Every structure is written in C-alpha cells, then in structure tokens.
Amino acid sequence: MFDVEFFDGPDLRYMERWKLIHDAFPDNVVQRIKTVDAVRDTLKHCEGIVTYDLEGFPYKVKLDHPVSLVIIAAHNTMAEQFPKFKGYNRVYIGVQTGDKQYLVLHVIDYEEVLSDHERIKKGKCYVNPGSIKRDPKTGHMGCFSKSVLGPVLNGMAKVLESSRKWKSEDSRRIPVFTPTRVVFQFGDDHTLNYEIHGGRSFGFNRGCHFYDPPPPIVVSANEIWSLPGGGLHFQAAKVLAVGEYGEEIFQELMDKPTSLKTLERIAFERLCQDPDAMNELVFGEGGVDLMEGFDF
Image (cartoon, rainbow, N blue to C red; front, side, top):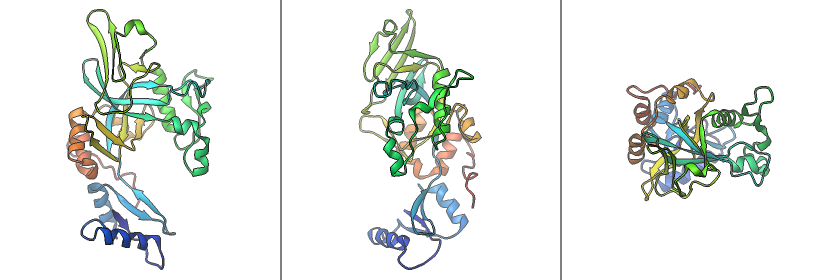
C-alpha cells in the first residue's frame, strides 16, 4: 500500500486508513510519498499508489501493464435476452502458438455492462446494447454510445465484424468441437486449431465465431498469475488498443505480439508488481515511457 499525503487535518479518512494499515503491517507496507520524483519512481517499480482527494476519499493510481494478444473468438450470448442485438459481448483472447494454432488465455465479457441498466444507479458504466449497430451511412458495425466504454466497444465492434471468421454453425468443417478445443478441417492438410488454456472455467459454445488470422488487441491486467491447471489468470483486464481505438504507443504494440513464454515469465516473476521491468520485457530493450500520460 502506498499513499500520497496531500495535507494534514483532523478526522481525515486518510489518517484513519494509514493508521489501520500501519498497525497491521508496520515494517514495509505503508510509505508516505511526498515528492513528484518519488511518485514517478513508485509507479514504475511498485503495483501502484493509493491517493486521496481533498475530501479524503481514496482512489488508486497505477501504470498500465500492457501485453499484446490476439482475438481468437467471439460470441453473442445475449441473443435470447436481446434478439435485436447483433454484436458480440464475449471475446476470447490469447496467443498464436504455431501455424494456424491458437490458445485462449482470457475472456472479456461485456454482458453485464450491456444488460444491467441498474449499474447507472451504482455509479457504474452501462451501455445500451442498441448502441452497437450498423452505421446506416457506411453499413459497418460500430458502437454509438457516449459512455466511457463507447470508444472501446466501437473499436471492438468494427474489428469483430470486419475480420475474417469461421462460424461454429458450419458443422461440416468441424471434426472436433469440445468446450476446450475446436478444429476446423479444410481438405486433408489444412486445419485450424483453437484451444483454451488449462484450469479455466469458461469454454467454447455453439454460436462462437473463430478468427483466422486473429486481429490484435492490447490489454492491461492488474495482475497476471499462474493457475493450478497450467493456465494464466488476467485480473481485471482492460482494453488499451483494438482496431482504431487506443493511444499510439499501444497501437504500435499490436505489431509486437507477446509470446506465451513471456506471459508465463510475467506471471512467475510477478512483473505486474514491477511495471518498469515488465515494460522493457514487452516493448523491448529500453522500453517506452508510460509516464507520458501523467500530468504532475
């Protein structure tokens, strides 16, 4: 836990929280950070900072932990609830492990964001599923929501619609279809293999559409760790770049896919706790300056 002390005052939530954490972990967990240089150094070498606004309310500041993956499959699981919704709410992302071989590591599912209108009352993001539709002028899919997730879902919708895909409904081309493995067969020699990494609770379902070649996507997770079944878990993953969406620094990373070996190293060495080291591993020697977006 790292705290930025903006000011002192009576009965602040900051002081109460600081004392509770300090009493529980007096040796090395809590540090007061008072200079800009110290803030920069902490963000580069630790998971993040817990800071406070002038009313004493806490919020977290973290550097992104970008990794470059691919979109392997997508699924509309909301068709029964919203028959007019023609987009995809569930996206399977992962890595290419060989020629026409793809391994799913994580699923991003926007079903709650698109279906639970009550999220607005809780101060959370809600996107009307009707906002994901074809542009009447261009005929292309997009998201026309003005919500904070609108630009992300717009980039996602365009990519998922325009990229080449194979449908699970085309059963004559599918000799193998299980929750963890799907194979498309084209003649005697040409196959597409899609698998899900071990230890995952999600699986492939009829209605999934599979991409070849898979479009790139850059995501950031709070933490990446290994699962007992051999898979990897991406905690609270968010999309940094997909299609036309994303800052230039992350757009460029889409051309540098992160290998499975690198992801496993990130998990084993817990490099999300050391963003600077992870940055150099993912972007290459010297890394990039992920602090550009911070205004001090």
